[in-house]
Amino acid sequence: MTITINLPEDMMSRLQASWSNLPQRTLEALAVEAYRDEVLSAAEVGRLLGHRSRSETETFLHQKQAYLHYTEEDLLRDMETIRNATGS
Image 1 (cartoon, rainbow, N blue to C red):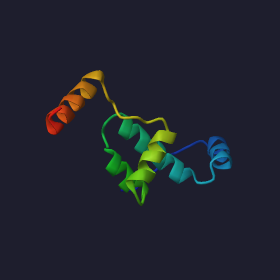
Image 2: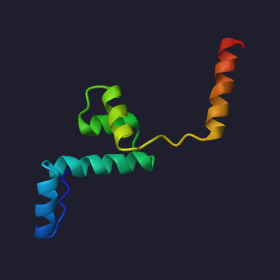
Image 3: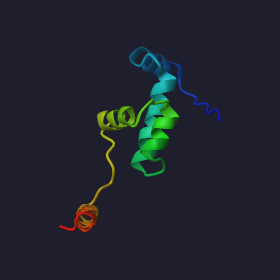
């Protein structure tokens, strides 16, 4: 799919001057917001952006401050799962 964005010329010029690869930056912004909204998984973000490894994707998301939604309940459930698996 191709997406076209119409920008006023003056804004496009400033964006291109600040961001050398405007299409890539736009794609990255889309991927980050989709991840934050839980529309895309980290693996899908990596695939969309052409990352070669999970580590590359995790580093990218960390740099963009796009963190998983992880609640205290999630932590407690994970701790219980670990206790059950190890017999502790």
